[in-house]
Image (tube, rainbow, N blue to C red; front, side, top):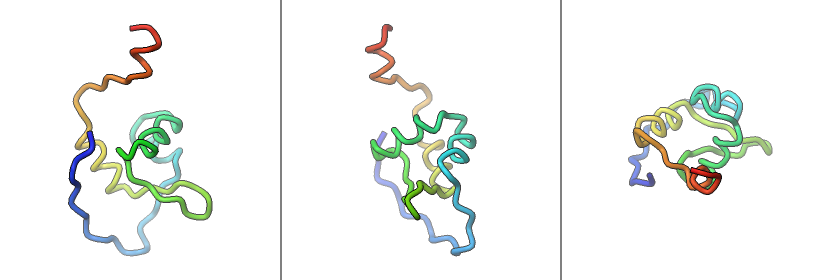
Amino acid sequence: MKSTRPKPDPKPIGEKLLTIREAAAVLRLHPRTVREYVRSGELEGRVIGGRWRFRRIDLAWFYENAPRTWDWPAKRKAGE
């Protein structure tokens, strides 16, 4: 899913950053799944003060560029 991503215009510093739980709620995913997407480089986030933070624009980009169906390698191993 990795693709060349155009850099969005920076938002003012006043933009509310989301926690990993809030980002997971927006995407309707488990926080652990969100962490996996960050580790794989598919979702952009920042560690600020020792905690993950996410911008809504990055969540929107992730959602818009996600494939229509996902085939998780771990899911295949667990017993198709």
